[in-house]
Image (tube, rainbow, N blue to C red; front, top):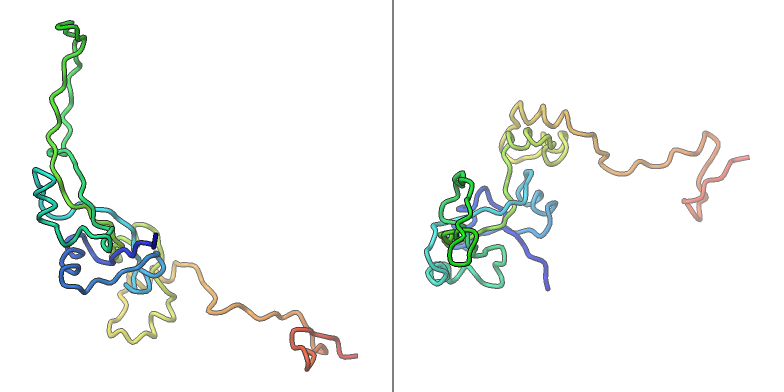
Length: 190
């Protein structure tokens, strides 16, 4: 079974509008999503769209979205009222061979649930304690047409320093040199 390429968007309604328009960026892994979005992302699953009384009504409304290509869209059954009322303690009834009274069935509705890579705002990234994507020297030099805000610069300065490329070995001295036929071997010049 192939991996699911989840959409990259700011919220669940944005996923649905971009999916219908056909202009939806997708990524399998978090790093791919961050590179595509050029920002930090988080994987979320949110309800989207109106609720339906029956599963058939929901299937009719989302006929084109619930395909194998879009496995990030699913119909879920949930309680109609999300608020939970404080229940009173039950007292046994001892009637008709039953000790406890029967509960009323919970009223349920059907709603579309969308899983996607959510593009985080600077405030959300700061609240989570994550550094922005990339390094400060690269972000400042980028020609994206937008300047970094002071908050973004502070967040970048508090992130870890990452090497642009691995450091070369500095284990040979003044009179050591690499062999011409094999530069990986360093010998002493005597």
